Length: 396
Ligand code: C5P
Image (cartoon, rainbow, N blue to C red):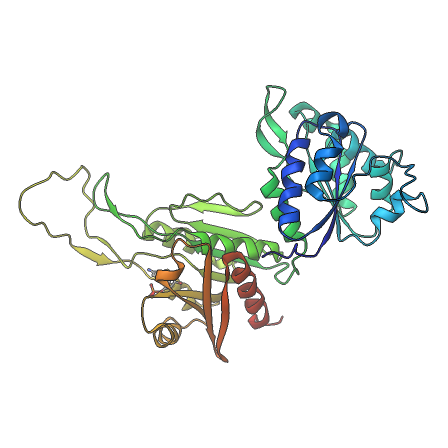
């Protein structure tokens, strides 16, 4: 479940080969419960047909400023009223230029000018067109006008060149649309998040790890970013792509995670330790691959530094949030852990349900007591956690 459920999205397509991604975006939006209306420029219709977009959106597609199907023949007004967001994807260099100047010589540009709602644009163009000073000038103007520019990304382009100008993937645009509906509860705050497992080397090829996937920590980082915070994510080894628009620091061992956090914590307003940090590491990591023998061997371990505990007891500590993954006696253990670590808020979950899964269930413990967040996708829980943190943050 996302906040896109029940939203009315007007999806505009201008001309570009990336128009095929708009088909997938439409599917994602309708599956998430949005009402999607599609408007296409004449050039867009050369790349993908209105029939495809009609079938996927379940609504007639509009292409013409002069549309007799609209009772008052003012399609631009009719369509732009009552929608929660207009998303132009792909937004060509020409379309961005038009938007920047306020030109309105077709249906899509006219309804953008007549809009009352927010406007998001996902640029898609060749790298030279993207880098051209005229395009950059237009983008500056569009941002100043409050238009959200999504991407673009860098990579292979349809023209055979490689560089900046590739439209974001449908999934990424979907996430940005979802994000634009989030309340900016942490605007102006700096949030430091740890996520994922750690890896404690035994020798050059082996180590001690755990089954944390990083999904909960990444969801928390994304939710904090969507709430308007500047986010730094210190991540142990995971297979996940970093959410866009935040700083990601990759680490491997608990000591590296500790060092990365300590180097940044002084600037943080909030620290959220979601990582499953190894409590112990081998006393000595061998500099070569250990040879197999016949007898038993003993691995000597020494404790790792407690990152959360160290941050929480600093002078001028940020607002600290811990996670507790327990396998039994969840509530008693979690509450005791909150007091021991001296953190104002602790989120507890059952490790056997949480590790690796897409859903989770959390119980939050704070000075007021316990607050249960029922089973839901991790991003939904992460958003609820961020809202809870925003309520507890000291008011300045
Ligand atoms: O004591 P326990 O490992 O169960 O505590 C879990 C919480 O402490 C999590 O928030 C985790 O990220 C954090 N932690 C840490 N450094 C450690 C161990 C745990 O920051 N060495």
